[in-house]
Each structure stands twice: as structure tokens, then as C-alpha cells.
Length: 575
Image: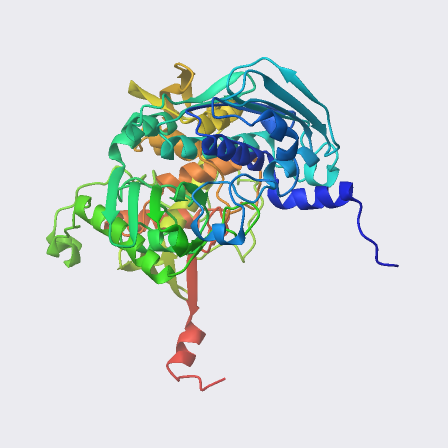
């Protein structure tokens, strides 16, 4: 096949794919344009998760009428004029690709009035084709409407996520820009419902209470760090406030929202020893460095940057967070008698633990005397009767079986026990525990969207609730099996965003919700268990249908056979 130059209509759509990956990419580029235009009010309107409409309107400086058509051309920008300008960029945009890329894959309308002109301009582009420019009367500022995104690129459109996911990403993006640019009024409306509103008063704590809830906003720790090379401000969570994934770790560098593995690693390393495995902090950091010390021209989306001295930046972030959380985290104190025998110390029951109600019997029978007709699990899944040896490192249980030694992960094992108990409950009459006093929980917009879509399933597993305003839920009852948990934490655990690194074998939404509840309710690693608690965990694990893995597929136990131990001790030779 001969080599030929692609038509401009094709090359522009291919290039647009680097900048416009999904609706949230469009929102990001348009917000940054508004910020660069010195706007102090930005209103975003979304329909159908951005598939049919994305509209961003600001009261910034606007675009001169004669430049409206030029602004839609690729590599047209007012931010730089020479290659040397890349060394000291202070604006968010500079590549001149965003508007051209968006216009190439949508029906695009630009309305603007420059602050020094009497008339406004409207310019319409469809699928990147040159449009018409006309005059109109309007106030100072710019409004951009992006309709039918990817209508001419079906290959990209079919890979978009579900609406609830795309809306969540947009809400998270807007909330982060609203937090950093706290002096700007932001409003986000999705499908006619206002989900985010800030007042531009510069009060970041106030904005945090809108993004999360009042309690979370109060508990977040403030960071203020500065040396000769870098200044860091922002918020990070104490060790008792965590999330199941790292999605709420975000960084702004010189006002630019970026994704950087070095910064994320520094945050996680700072929390080493403070958080249990699988839990992550909330960290929102705003950094200021010399523009000459970073390279922002790494990727068309401008979400990636390079530091001239990554080690220095890593140390600064690590130090800033470590000092902050250390100052507010009490040093754990363990009584020396936790290592003494159980006979020599008193035991206070831990109500977070659910004891077995009856002794384990290998062959249970129905009340009418007939044997159960359930299918016998395979020998691979079942475990034999085990004799408890004890707890190791406050993380594992050691037990002896007829065929060797078993080491059991207490968190994963309890998670499996709770998961099977919750799944065995009759969903038409779930076991619920009424609260003595109703608990009111305020949900951020993304969680409220998930809650609305999963209310029926939450009722099936034992929650009882009623809506209490646009962003509040009044919890009346929780599943009986997790009654020891805080009701608000239990509900948030059930509806928090799916973890990317853990997938259930059964992908139904109900199973995922139950799994997330059980993960939060299960006994934690590092928790000292009494002999009675250890015994009951083993007995209930033996009764499980799938005792060898937790709901996410991780092993609950390791088996060291007698033969393997004999080989390790040289009793059977080296075979």
C-alpha cells in the first residue's frame, strides 16, 4: 500500500484522542481556560454524563472577536510565543490543542465577549469543519457548549464507562479545582440537579465540608511546609480516617492538577506504620515550585510533569506529611501483660466480634431429623477440624490439623465468615438492628449518586433509611451483623467507589456491596483476640462453603503439610 498523507479531517480526530479521552477531559480543559481568563465565577452544566452536553460558562476576560475563529485552530495560543517560554510557564494552558481537539469530535459552540469590546461573538464548529461567525449581544466572558461528544468517533464513544462513573469523575475534578481555587465561585449541575456549589470566599475548610461532610472536614489535618525550593499547603487525613483506594490523593503543582507516581509514593511512604494494609489516606496537596524546575510539556493532557530533582521533592512531601500526622497521632501503648497467658489477665469482651451461637458439629441435621440436602463441598474447599495453637503477631492464627500446620489470616478469615453469613440471610426479611437514635449522614455528590442507584439493594441487605435533604441520609437501621459499626461508616463502606485492584468472582452489585461491608466489619490485623475469639473464628471458618479464600480471592490460610515440614528438617532427605 502506498504511503499517503492523511486528510486533515482524519488526522485531527486522531490527534483529538490524545487530549479528549472522555467527558471529564473536556471539562478539565474548559475549566483551565476559564481560570487563565481570570474568571471568578465558573458554571458547569452536564447532561447525560457529558455525552449530550457539556457547557462551561465564565465571567473572565473573554476572547477578542477577531480571534474567535483563530482560537479553534490547532496550536493557536496566547500563552507562549517561543520555545524559551516553556521554561517559565505560569498559565495552565499553553499548547493550543484543547479547543481544536474538542471541536473535532463534537458539535462545538463558542460564545464570547472580550472585556474591551461592546459586542460579543458566536462561532459554531461541527466535527472540526469550519463554521460561521456572527455577532451577538452578551455580557463579558465566555460560554462554550460541547454537544454530542464523540458523535463522529464511535470507536471512542463505545469505550466510555457507565454514566454514574463518568459523572463521578467530573464531580471529583470540579471539587478539586474548587478546593484549590477557593476564591472562584464554582457551580456544577448534572441533569438539572446542582451537585456542587462554592461561594468563592477563599475558605477551604468550608469547601471541604461541601465535598465531604462536616466531620471529615474538621478532622483533616492542615499542612504548611516551606523550604528554599518548595512550598506545600493542603490537607491530609489522620491515621483514623482512611479510604479503600488511593483516589483521594491529589496534587496541584503551580495551580495545575497533576498525576505523579513520585508524589503518590511519598505520601504513602509517609503513612507507613500508621495505616493497615489496604487502607489509604485522603491527601490534597497544593505545591509551589520554580517553573524552571519542572517540565510541564510531557503529555498533551498536561496532567503529567517532570521534576528536575525528584529526590528533593519526594523528601519534602514525605517530611511535610510525616511531621503533620506524627504531631496528631498518639503513640500506641500496649500493656506488657498482652504477652502473658490468658489465665493471668482479665478479659473484656470485644463487641466487634460475633461469637458462634452453638458448638460446631460435623454433621448437622434439620429439626425433623432428616439430613440436609445441600451439596457437599469439594475436599479442596473444605478444611479439617483444627486445634488452635495461638495468635502470631496480632495478625495470624496458628492451628494444627491432622495433615499439618495451618496459618490463618484473621482479617481475611473473618471477612469470609461475615460474607457467607450475610449472603445466607433471607433478603425478603433481612436481619436489621434498629438504631436507638437515627444517624444523619451527609454524602458528597459522587456518593449520593451511587446511593440513589443502590437504595433497593441496600434495603435488601438490612439498611433502613430515609432521605433528609439533597445531600443527607437519615439511617434508621443497619444489618444486624454489623451493628457494632458506626452507622454512617457502614453506609459509606457499602457505597464507596469500587476498588480497582480487587474483583469479586461474583460480579453482582449486591455481592460487591456485601463484600465491602464485610471488609469494613471484619476484625483487623493488629487486633489482639482472646482465646475464645480465636476458637470461634476457626470454628466458623470451618463451617464456610469456601473457607480458603476471602471474597476478593485472597487466601485466608497457608497449609504446611507434615511431609513438607519433615523435608525442611531433613527427615525425608532432599527429595
